[in-house]
Amino acid sequence: MSGRLLVLAAAATLGYAAPAHADPCEGTLPTRAGVQFSGIVRYVGDGDGLCVGRTADPNEWIEVRLADFNAPELHTPGGPAAKAALERLALQREVICASEHGHGGRVRSFDRVIARCRISGASLGDLLRQAGVAEGGN
View 1: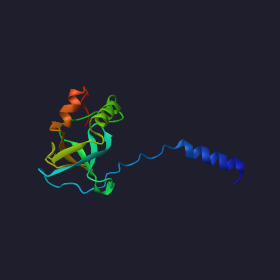
View 2: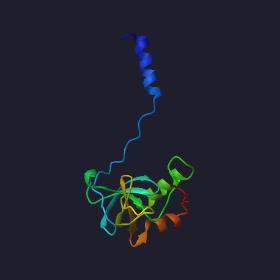
View 3: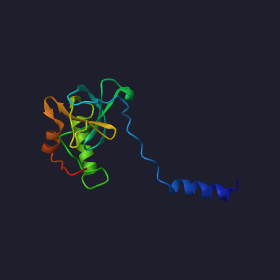
View 4: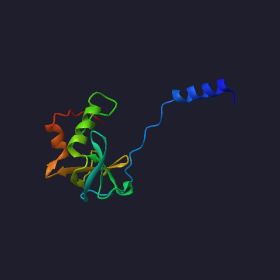
C-alpha cells in the first residue's frame, strides 16, 4: 500500500466513532419479583443503572435498573451529573437489592433487572433525590 493510501485509510478509520463499550455485568438476572441479592456496587453505567457483585468476577455481577429513581439519559442534560452522583453514593459500597415489577409488569428492563437497592437501609432512589439529582429519564 502506498504511503498516501495508508494515510488516507488511517484518516478514514479515525473519522468513525468507536462503538460504545458494553457494560461488564454478565451475571444471571432474577426472573421474578421479590428476589433478594446483595453485594458490592462494582460498576455504574448511568444515573439509574449499576452492577452488583459479591466477587470481582463480572460473570457474577447482576445488572440493576433502579426501581425507585428515573435518571435523565446519559446523553441529555443532567445525565452525566446523575451518573456521577450515583458513583459517589454507591460505587464500591455494599448494597442489598430486591427485584420488583416495573411499570409494564416486567421484572426486567432490557438487559437489567428492575430492583430497589439500599445502602445501610436507605434507598438509593431516596439518596439520589436527597443529593439533588433531577429525575426525568425514560
